[in-house]
Amino acid sequence: MKRGNAITMRSFLLVAVTSCAVVFGGNELVLDAYSRPVKAFTRYYPRQVSSKANMWLTTTNTSDPETPCLERRVVYTSVFSEDETIMFIPKQGAYVRVSTELNTVMSLDSKCDTLGIWRVADSSSKIKEVVLTGSMSSNDSIFTIQRAHRFLSIYKFAFGNSTDISFAEKGSDVPVFGSESAFVFLPR
Image (tube, rainbow, N blue to C red; front, side):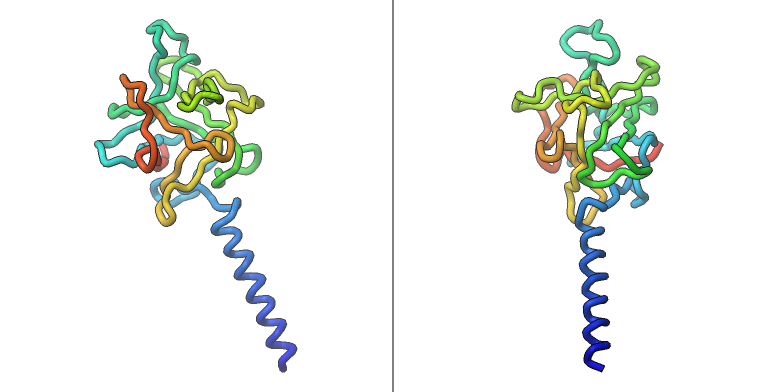
């Protein structure tokens, strides 16, 4: 009888440890605003979690107003655009997982009829400006999504697997840091 209890206890511990690894480890799914798994190659609206009014990710020209579409930078705006969405392209799998390397693509339907792959413009700079001139195989185009809240489906973008990415508000060069730079993903 004691041997049976020992086997049962070991089995229980194995299941408990495995379950914790899935919930808290690298297998954790990124969830959208409705608590559904975020799918790869699917368009989402990234809404900033902020004390301000709803803020959305958009693109803007760099210093030159004639900037080509793919040389635009990613910023916040209070103006919602149905045409500006993002898609996540993980290295593998049909769903996006926390801390998994991926490419982020921004659709610019109304402006350019093209997709722009996110890239960190100058990875040595303290402020990480994101532009749309990346490539799928370049190290400066690899991002991860990190959990920004323990219980809610709120996430932050990170460059590589550690450096938090912060975006400036449109018309400003001052990036937004901390919990103000967290997002929820709304399905299109």
